[in-house]
Length: 434
Ligand SMILES: [Zn+2]
Image (cartoon, rainbow, N blue to C red; front, side):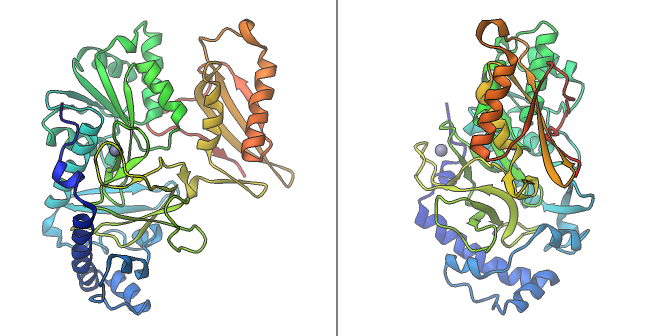
């Protein structure tokens, strides 16, 4: 079984890779200066000579690109290729309302397909597999991203899309006679739950692997996905501003995501100062796209919090890994001055996965002038409480675990199975009513 799709690219010696990155950067910066007025203005303001890149570490002198730049450029002002060469548009629907558009040339679509193909193969995908794609199709990049990647490697993609959970169950049972699936991790759990309600046992399906992304998920959710579906679960990372899924992926080691460094230069920078942090320290992920054509970006701050895993990976790939993303700085909740990510709460709750189901919601309100955080989590329907301890003792213990780990007091309520509303795309984990 071939586990590396493009060995020449994915296992390229570091020196060769970095020389290639430098050459690409030397071409990209003057090109952006000449084609994108926003970049000309940014580089001029920073007094950067676009032809002055000498070494790869000069990257750190270049100006950042932030989400607002893309909104300001709406719709096409940051395109660096003529519209005649753009063959696809995607957009990200910011939770705040405004949208930003990304344009792809033929080369960009091919690069994206190749990147996703590598991710599928790393998860154990093979040419004769059938891949059930339950990510949303359309303007969101998940569905078409995985679809093109599956086709690129010669597998058969089923464009199921999100929704109609009964049909998902039927297709996974009857059509995926050999292969895998892709969707958000919360939707995969919903499908598993629905299957059980229909009297199915998903672990009996031939499904081998799942490629889950578009929302942060924890190691404990991996355990749940693997247990409930009888598969290997892999994380895939991406964002529409950069490309879509496939910017990074997990290999069989399941410890961090390889960023595809032959197409994406990345840095981890300090949230406050914007300075690169030493390897291994946490910060925000910043990505430059040296060979993108439609809408290349210089130092795009993803706001995703992670760190580099400095050790080389035993799988043989030379592209560096990042730790799975804990959360986006934008998703961070500040409770009485303490920074909390919903995914941290999830991690604690899921250490009680025997008793608690992987369905939870964090509700933040104001009690007078004080922030109040309520965490609702569902009881695991298969758990028999008389066996071990009372519900109240469990509630107190989990609440204490959150308090000691995150330094916040929460109101924790264990609710009936299936009482938290399910979504067919990204899970709604946080309701901030302040
Ligand atoms: Zn690896």
